[in-house]
Structure formats: structure tokens, C-alpha cells
Picture 1: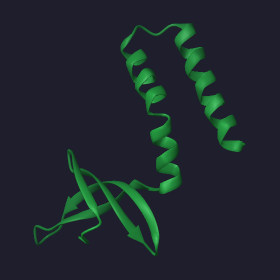
Picture 2 (picture 1 turned 120 degrees about the horizontal axis):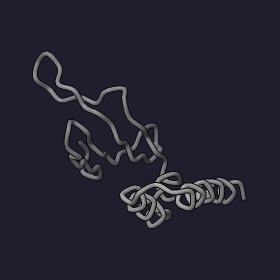
Picture 3 (picture 1 turned 45 degrees about the vertical axis):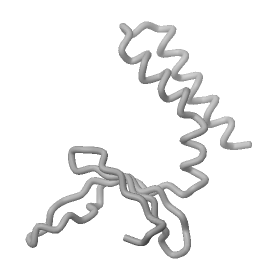
Length: 96
């Protein structure tokens, strides 16, 4: 691992890594597996976000937290419609 990279253990064999690949800065969230020699390696299941995508995710963190909190409440039509509206609003903003 290079000095400017970061690895965070997310539990259950999942990790977040900040790294560069072909000159592109990435936030990589991936499942890891242990090979035959006992070495932990990244698997194919996961996602690599560019800095732009990561920034967009982080800028919406409050909306994500609110949506997660609402999932604890009993489902009702208002919550479902609010979630659908937020999804549409987020999609509309990204097109601008």
C-alpha cells in the first residue's frame, strides 16, 4: 500500500480503500477473500467510485441517513412517496 492510500475495515470481509488506478483517484468499496496462501485479496464484488461520484454521495449523506431512519418506522404511503420524490429529485439534479 502506498503512503497516500487508505484502507478502512468495514467488517464481514468488506473494506473501503482510497487509491489511484491509471492516474484516477478512486474510493473502492469491496468484498475481500482469503487465497490459498492465506493472503487477503480484493474480490470482484464491489464498487469503485471516482472522486466526483464520491463527492456526490457525501453531499447527499443527510438524505441517506434520513431515508435509513425512516426505514425503521412502519411503512406508509407518505414515506414511500417521499422516498420516490427524493430519488427523482436526485436524478434531476445530476442531469443539470
